[in-house]
Image (cartoon, rainbow, N blue to C red; front, side, top):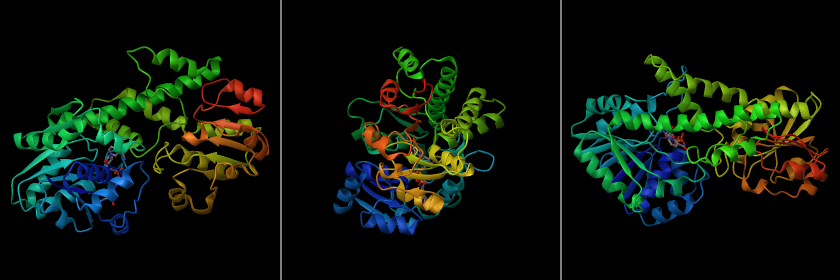
Length: 435
Ligand code: NAD
């Protein structure tokens, strides 16, 4: 099939590369000239395991092309994916500006009957706006499809190649036929393609992210309570998660959720619900609990260092909002860094993938270390912010030797409290007794 993907970010690039991998001819378009020029030379703008080889291979075999000429991408395509950003507007609602700009271009430049697919996360009702925008210029019939994306950064290729399900919101037989055909290679193991009306598909994405954010905030609040009551949230999590009605996923307490999706999608859904006069009170509480949680680490470091941070140097392990990605959008590390700097501390950070992004975002406000041990040099405490695998089993003797004093604040509960006690580390984590 001849496919074009407009917007070549985390989602667009993965979608484009994976669809090319199954034999389609895919053109990825973006207005970011630097990004596209890099991609033409197989230089990826993001870190995502497995993606580079897919881009390289499919580009070499001419199934995958990149362009900044949107007209050239749109004109011949049988299916056009819209995968541009939908950042939060000032009132928290999703800003459809980029999506509608692309819709207008599609209307103007299509040269054949097309299926137009919204991959971007958009509020319920957006498909109608997209269709209206396309219709202004369209000289050919088109079919709207809402196809929300559920990939997880850090495992995006795997998630796209082997999805738990594919959700398709459609209103024409043509769109159903084309889209189920396109996705057939990805669901050969029997995972479902769920075909539904467009409003339900749009809602499904927000509902899923809202539920996951709810689990995280619930566990974070529970962790704070566990600390007060002398319980361990780790044990409580295991006790709860083994109940098959609850399950184990997304029950880990931490420094609050971040990333490009949960914060903005929760905000947007709360906003939509309010506007409809059907408020989502639980989700509004999830959001405010998360705002509080993002400040927990600064407080813990401050307490661990005797209530004052000015003149202290703090080592950070992890900047990305989660392991496996270089994405720092809304990362808890940013709130932590702001808080530490405001209190007069200096920060030296390490991250296996996000150092370049961090340098671009934070400049010389903090120092950067090429290895996790280098970050510890001259530091008064270590804070573990992102649960990268390489932080799970460090050489603790070396950590102790390198830090000025053996203080660890663990935002991801990576280490065993008893072991830390035995090692003589002053250890604070989330929702567990301190050592
Ligand atoms: P991103 O910021 O990484 O990429 C968006 C891209 O769109 C950028 O490269 C930008 O230059 C390009 N763009 C903007 N305006 C354009 C225009 N008019 N024409 C062409 N290109 C344009 O964003 P992302 O993380 O890939 O997210 C895209 C959408 O997918 C969002 O709605 C997001 O909520 C949703 N989503 C993201 C994830 C994720 O994990 N990142 C997962 C599921 C869904």
